[in-house]
Image 1 (tube, rainbow, N blue to C red):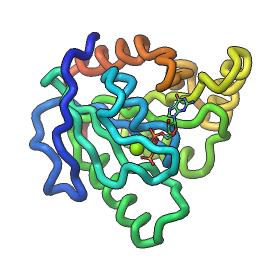
Image 2: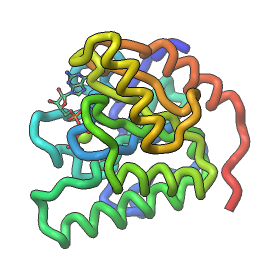
Image 3: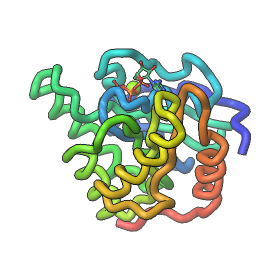
Length: 200
Ligand SMILES: Nc1nc2c(ncn2[C@@H]2O[C@H](COP(=O)(O)OP(=O)(O)OP(=O)(O)O)[C@@H](O)[C@H]2O)c(=O)[nH]1
Ligand SMILES: [Mg+2]
């Protein structure tokens, strides 16, 4: 698949601002600062489509991007960011859950983790949640440009061990170098083509 058009559509702080159903959706989830917004920019081959930043907590609402006028690529706030108030964290959690529960046209979740870090309880909870909802996912072990090839392989094994993944559920990735961008685009393309709405 080639991405020829990527447009920012809007930002949602609640259900009422989600775009109407119709197009299939691909969502990006993961811990704050793992590189979710950077993955979107990498896929769209645009430097500043989604806001990124060195400090966690950059994305605070759900961002919708229209890709090829055919599907939504959706950026979520990150979880696990300690330096916001409990109230704000609860609000993000409710927002993320309302989105993931609500959207029948979700075809695939791209769960972004930092390949240099061990997954934690929140990552585990997210994987369990995705499994329990039977939402297809792939874990992107991002920032692989910071690792040597051997370390990258080891990071994937460690990740798989901690989260009980089968090989097809993770991919070494770099939003900066574009490592495995093509493979991810093929996966997205095949999921978009697979049709069908999620069951209740
Ligand atoms: N070296 C390297 N750095 C990356 C990569 N992807 C993201 N980063 C950096 O990681 C930091 C966080 O990236 P973001 O894309 O803003 O992360 P996010 O997950 O959207 O963060 P929140 O919106 O705060 O949840 C930025 O400084 C990025 O430049 C990558 O593949 N390699
Ligand atoms: Mg972000």
